[in-house]
View 1 (spheres, rainbow over the protein chains, first blue to last red):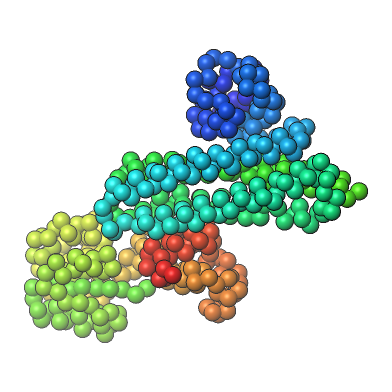
View 2 (view 1 turned 90 degrees about the vertical axis):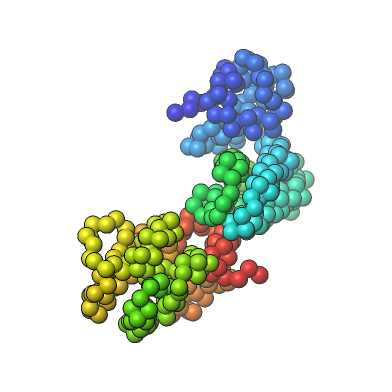
Length: 233
Length: 181
């Protein structure tokens, strides 16, 4: 079982234990070549809040870890900043990475009998939904929550807060379906190694979105609801 | 379940008898062919190939991967313990042939179900999901209860590993159950 990260943990040990955590580190501007420093030292160098960083890393590493209490000590601004960085990472790196692998797989496959083209169409639909959610975060949800935090939007209500973020579970379900299409339903002739590259990229995105949804739905959403109640009273 | 059958027998009269029997008893209009090449193009859709042992041996590379869908007519009865290969003696009487075919189709259906292929009813539900119908509409169209629809959906997801409506729709398209819009 993976150990919980603390400010005294060596970051290199955490990466060795779970290499996929690199995708989270990138959002904080931490790149590979971390040396043997502990989290406290690296966070101080990068001007990152140590406790927030540790809470995020543990949320990513441990499915059963619920950082509500720790996260509650941070403001909506810190959490939204992290979610913005996550969205940027999806848009600029993870989605293009899956697309690159997918197009390469199709370009190296000349068997007209396989069903890769249809699965790519399904992926494009999921991608469209994810990008739409990101656009909605940027144009509506995040600004509204920040406005509530600064108490500048006195007309906010619980109803508006409850409407936030509908559909995020659907994206998770669809990525699950995409993964199972690769594992169970691929047909015809194709390069197995290239298909594995797409599958790995999809699995990484799924894990990331699942952990991210926990922060969105179990931390930011209740925080936004509480801010809305304060704003009303 | 609808079956698609081909008959590849050197003995023309035996081929005619098998065709008549499949049509009369099982309502299957089998296609009588003269060579394996005539089956190849539609091999994935054919779930029953009646072939004599000479053609089987001559085209063993074609038949071996499809042995669970192949019924071999032999000049001598072979031992039943023969892996997935189903055989029937050429001199078997009508009742024996019917019994052998019933067993062949039943075990084939069980195998299909065990390997995760959907039942006919689940296919109907899947088609309606893929056509954009909600559970209540599916229940009305098939004259079944809402709970039964939910059970079918649960079973479909368990068999296919696909949960979302979009995912199920793409699966239906990939398998020719609905036409892509």
